Image (tube, rainbow, N blue to C red; front, side):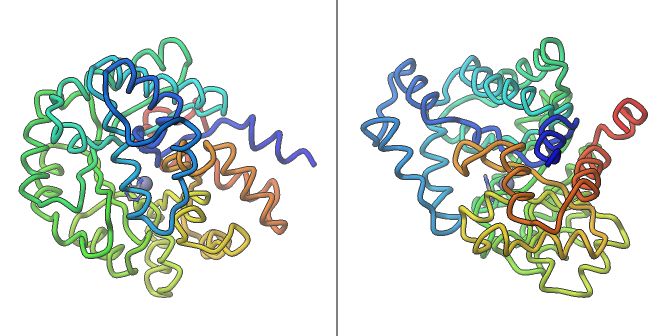
Length: 327
Ligand code: ADE
Ligand code: ZN
């Protein structure tokens, strides 16, 4: 069929991609060597073999260990640049990247090193690859709200380099309600607001993210399928869900792609988008996610492909500026 080619070539936006989750094992080892960091894995192959996850936490432990090789501005640049080359190949025209500053500042890496390296790569992505890229600063929800507030204050000298804030890391036991003050502060600063909710957490966490944090998009949100009333609200308000199918399989959120709630969410009129989450860890970039998904869902064809890719462009925070160029 013509569908794989259409999926690969169509212009698309990526709205749920953790830049630290694009760090491939080869680059982890190269940076470890460059920086004299000792890794608890003997080789690229041994590290890759450790990528067998049973839940979100089993992944996060390895993901934070991988990020320990990032020390200098150039390391953050090189990591982001490697992702942008893959994004350009996948015909991503716009991407909104999550980054986790607390993972780095806790190791003594200055906030400016993180943001300036990523931001310089974003500028080069526009200039050299014609990929527009923005940054979203994520708070680690397993840490305290005071830590998140201090992180936001530390980032204020670099306010022009990021467009929003998000909430990620261990979801269960760390509900959105824990972060109301820091999201209110971010709103005052004119930042866009998003949060991971309903990946492992219950539909009530999605409701809290909307009602207490006032987020504009929900990251993952797949457990909305368990609440008919929430499904109606998300559809009526066209709240985008940034869904990550291969991630959901690797972290055992769903059994397999054929069993994914995406068809139910799309049929109910939700603004779902397809994203890669942590592509170096979950077996694929955005086009790999799209191809695997359509391969597993024989009921889906060109109509669904167009809808999903249009949703990605329309749900982006660049949509107003870009209207007419993409749509
Ligand atoms: N950090 C990176 N990927 C994540 C995910 N899928 N859920 C929560 N936190 C994350
Ligand atoms: Zn994520």
